[in-house]
Length: 128
Image 1: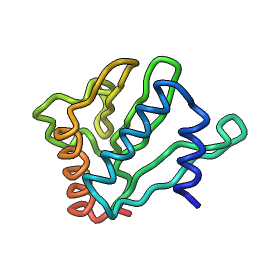
Image 2: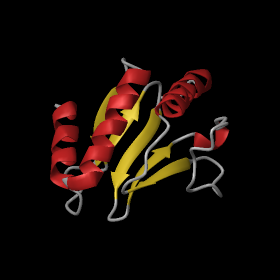
Image 3: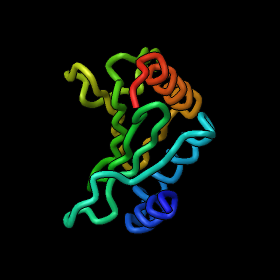
Image 4: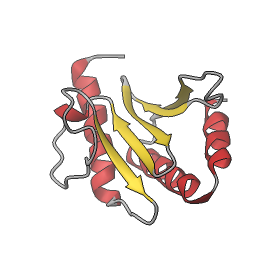
């Protein structure tokens, strides 16, 4: 059911945002095959919700805006980011985000490392 919700969300976006979110989803599953996906924060103004990937707690969310696809890492501030993927929400004490604009690409290897580090951080923290 939840995978179908994310399929519907991606399909509803169309264009470059759909392609970007689908690619991100693929990379997340390659990095952590046992990751759980869901759509959270469903409301009348956002009936399909926000795609969310979790393992021992929320790893990241994927939101699509007019100009960017935003990947927000729940504990991003506590993660090492040697390849400097985080480029948004840098002032916060907990979260960090990656904003992708049309035509931009993501370093797949560095992104998968970041996903794996986020899962490891969740497991060390013992949160759910």
